[in-house]
Length: 441
Ligand SMILES: Cc1ncc(COP(=O)(O)O)c(C=O)c1O
Image 1 (cartoon, rainbow, N blue to C red):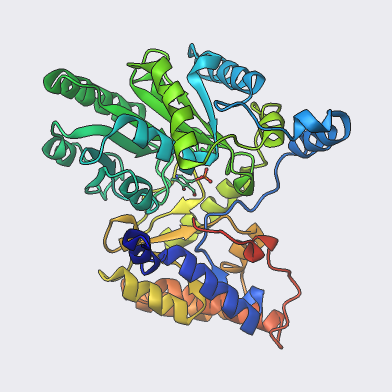
Image 2 (spheres, rainbow, N blue to C red):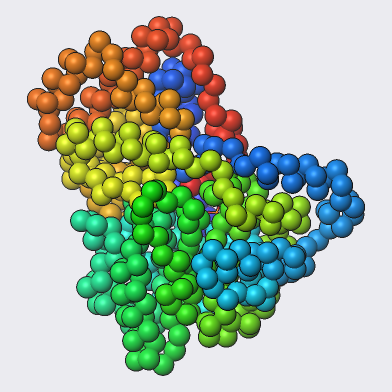
């Protein structure tokens, strides 16, 4: 019999993916330059050269049978050792090889972590705004995802609401900092407060509450922002890391879980992850990718473009009157929409080929997500001085606090782009990512 649960899921497609597909179709119709697609969180910069060089070296110099052979269940020993060492060097921790489990990205890491520390019926708490894929990750385990409402003034943790929701059935708390979609980085104060509350509740309930720390954006932090290493603040932390964003490798599906050595049952947990991957058939991430990333653990892609794009958008949108909590990292921004109905607002923008993601999908009303992992040139076009800008600025002044501000900005940028390319024949090639299957972010 077909499994009804997955049949039902087919009717609940990702809003983000649908918007991205719409953007692709519009680009085919009117030209890539005329569509301002801020929907998808796919890195827009190349992996570091050292990664490519290492891949080439491995292919040319390694013995092919072992290079392409199955990796051990928990990951290649030398890779696990190198990951532990890099965490110790960078964050003054005490990880060993035995604490590291190699896995297919943060998605795989979270799916393993939740399975290891919950049984069906247990609760996992997360905080709005949150990455919507947490719903399928958690639902598939039989645990229940509970959402703490957002503190929309800061997008740090709403502790009053958290305290109300904690109960004996909560076995794990899932956090994501730097955060998708808000771009906010939880401060040391926030993390310390969270750690204190969870430690008290562990004593009260008589069982551990694991902190599953989803950290694909750990390296994308803007200048001067306080970005604590979570596991240093709370012993029962399972760090779910991904190389998808830091090394721009989302298609290679590689990451790890680092179990804090001080964590309850740390040795058992890593062994359990190996058994979970056997059970889900999601085992042994590709050997060559494990080996290549292990040579790039102290590097990143050139991530500076994201801060440049953030600065342009944050400055221009706040000038227009948008209320935005300034992102401390990632490549996302989460402004307040100019009307309560975020879907209606994003639909208006969509009519003008500006593609934004309404906040409802992230568990918050009245906001929208901008994914600015797109070429800076394209972001600049949104703000380029043009003969039209002055008149639009006057319009903007008149329309301030009405529902059309952002739309007006983009009418301007659309016209600028159209005047550059009068026949809508785009000279700029759309990034190849748009042709890739499997985008879901
Ligand atoms: C917050 C968050 N968690 C997890 C993931 C999954 O990342 P990965 O590619 O490592 O599976 C993403 C991807 O965008 C994300 O934004």
